[in-house]
Length: 383
Image 1 (cartoon, helix red, strand yellow):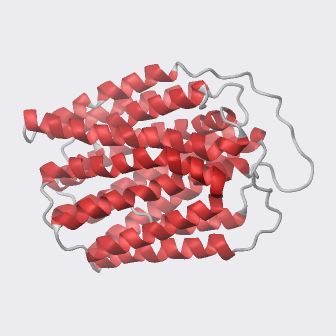
Image 2: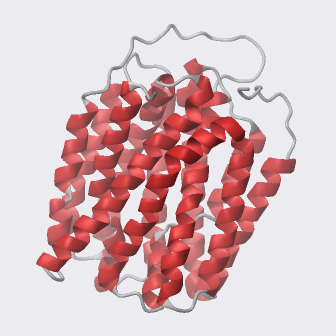
Image 3: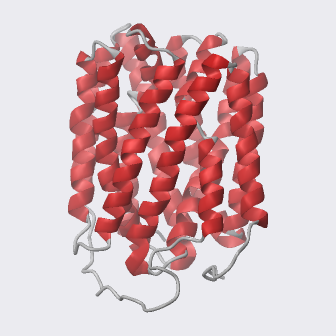
């Protein structure tokens, strides 16, 4: 049975993503109306994720030094929830960039401390399940958010700015829900002599994750691809919701399977499935293809997100998990910056097909690195 904290973190993630994903599916079309294009969308998402990545690393290091982690998480969620409605008054793409960056500052502050608290709330042999449950609830919120956005656009056609304002409500509810977390008194930090540096994640794992992430560009470009091939703008939130319904339903059971069948094996399968899906997006030609592909693509997150975090958290002692998770978040965030900007440039200078096939190729490469890379001095996985 999942612990109280794991369940509460799941509820917090659900509410926070209801707020965030009332906004995200509408941003590509909104930025286009303000004069931006695919490259600028890539810059916005890349810069936002880069900002978050740097702060996730800093907050991860801080998480190993402070006595209480919950205040950092509260500040991060509150900042993101309070700044998001300012999108309603944006008049230029650079203003969207500014708001998204402040939003991601909040995410950067909260993520590593929250993940360390979450890892402390589950036994080692159930880490993938705990992280996958949290990610599944996150995706449930990401499914509900676009449905609410679509409903509001039916009631108030074309009033995207009003949706941005209403997104503040579930965001603030997430902050209040977070107060239900019970943080235990921290154990004294042990400084080990010799051996690997504390908090060090195996280089093979980090390298593989980094390679994959450089090809894992923002999903906003997938929405742009769908729109360019005939999916109506009003259906984009529904397409986004379908993606996250699959992620929400599959994350918890596939997280449990990863703990039982092997996390590395599960991660490799997830990355290979990503490669297949991106190849499908590259050759898709009609709107119906995207409904099938988005549903299939939802399995990628269910197979990989909780599994990656569990492998990182399990690779180091509990007292250095904040730093380890911060390093992981820095690698993935930096990779997302490169991925979003690079994919946007390939998209416009070559073609959308080339950008998508590039992502598929790197996912295949990451699988090879994880499977065949060197394994010196790695901590033994849980049986």
